[in-house]
Amino acid sequence: MIDERDIERQLGRIAQECGGLCLKLDSSAKKGIQDRLVLLPRARVYFVELKRPGGGRVSVLQQVRRTQIRRMGFPALVIRDAAELAELTKSWYDNDERKDET
Image (tube, rainbow, N blue to C red; front, side):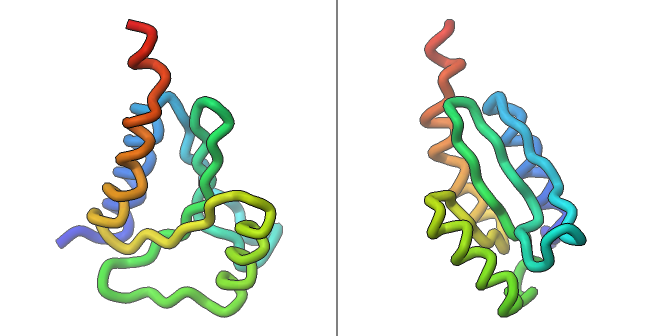
């Protein structure tokens, strides 16, 4: 069974394949902030909260932070399984500017 760490590794690998970075955020600076900050070419930024498949609730404070981030125009997402990750990252491959360089 795939777990949260597997999803985390896949997220990082896919971000790197698309020429980006997947950074772990330190929530001690701002409680409730999402787990990961994904930075991709062409100034694409995603805040991603990872939860274990079949569980892992989003806290009220995490919901508040997600709403704040979205109001500023940034995507703030919750990923619980490989299917949700694939749905998110499909557009990353579709918009990968490096494929235009070949």
